[in-house]
Length: 347
Image (cartoon, rainbow, N blue to C red; front, side, top):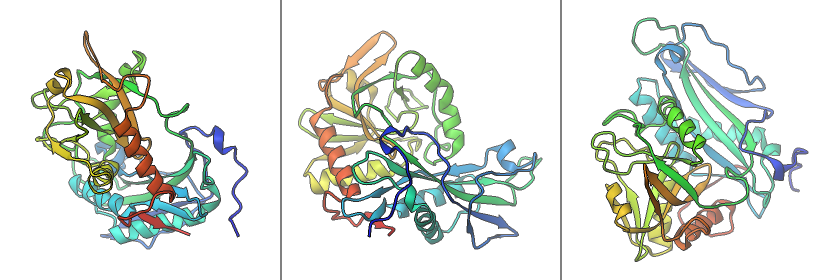
């Protein structure tokens, strides 16, 4: 029998936070993580001297749970989020939360909030936000001794209301990350770096920024919250790489590369991409990819007085971006066969 869902107008949901019944919590003290538990308490109490507040020891993840056409509740590649969070924590001297426990905690909190997983066809999903932060007192510059791992979940609507449409980006005068810094991990401090340029971009009518490499400012890196993809005239998918190791390894990007190569028979190039290649008409389509929007097509990139419009334009989604998005979302919803074993059934 199908599970009874909460009485929510799923179609009107925005990408905002709504309290659900339970969060998951586990604390690290005296060198060990406790066994963890579900909690109906969605508040966090911290010492004024907590390491999070002074030295920004915080990492997080983002994934979604879906209701498939068959009525199953599933999520997408949680093991990859566990791996990335493990690596992020190590980079800023936090005790990594065990990867197997991460996946089990995701399962537990989704099951406890199953009534909040939107029904199939609603266009909404359950967004899952695992995060970890320093709770122990720290006054000198050093790692804290105590930490908290939490998972909150919230039902959300589509990241972009009104359907998937091409957007405009501007080339930012700011850097998102330092060369060989923390750009390749999912830490809150990276997103803090992008807030000012993002607000500036939005005030000018842009969806986001295109950040160039922080060392030479000649290579394309990523946007404020997503990786960037390009398509050549011959249909080749081009995925920017960073020679300064400052691009976040996106689970969605990695999945799209596999979809392109192994399902759609596309040629894929993963390499550093010079911004000059855009202006030289090397690409006919572009897009931003990430958990929230999967793919958001990019129709135009502006750099000062230079306005470059891709061949796919601002009116329609390019055929390659459209096919990639439809295929990956089809796998996630159970409408396309999952030949990779990515879909993780919860209940």
